[in-house]
Image (cartoon, rainbow, N blue to C red):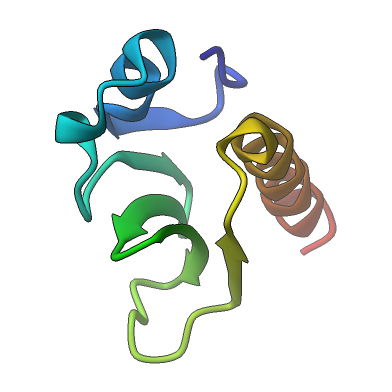
Length: 92
């Protein structure tokens, strides 16, 4: 996976899963991207992926949350989340 240079990649085990489709790699902490005061976080919980956008490290009240049942939609949804974060930063 490739991300805009403005994002710092903290965790990226998702790329390995998408390449191999090895279900043993599925876990709660799969991807974490940071850009200024926003975090994009993706994890696998029970039967689905959950994508969060966290603002100001407020994990109790995510800015955005999306459940994703289709792994084929992951990259598209992550790209949308990255665009959303960049838009929020540019418009502050």
